Image 1 (spheres, one colour):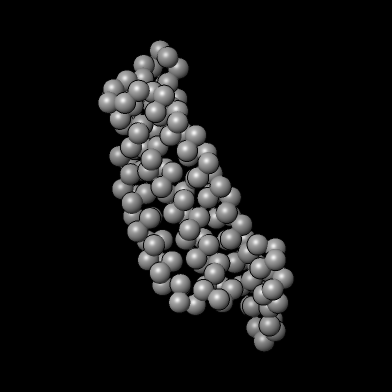
Image 2 (image 1 turned 45 degrees about the vertical axis):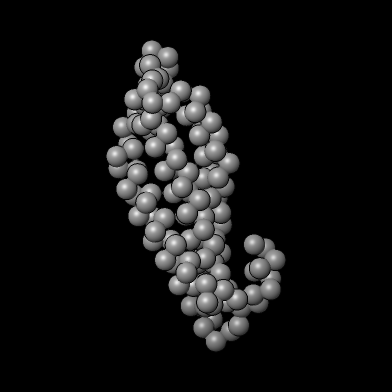
Length: 135
């Protein structure tokens, strides 16, 4: 396993100790966002439904990255796998979950602007082609 003297104390605290909380939450978040995605898929051509689907996919990316790091973190700190596997998993997290975080923020911002514009001017049409070009 990874030894605390090896400098892995911070990683151990943030990965291994939080894994019992992170794993069930990640599974729940993934299931919930799959349900959201499936629910809005039939209206995917509409702007708001597309934004909800984008948020759901981004949240699934975040959750699966956290799940992978948590599971491999437990395996690494109990000595089941080599610490290099954890480092490769952290790279996987950086490639999948970190863009998911940024995409979630982008889609939520677009959703907020869209819904605010609908509240301020409820009878005006939103130019969805401009919003889609931005996204």
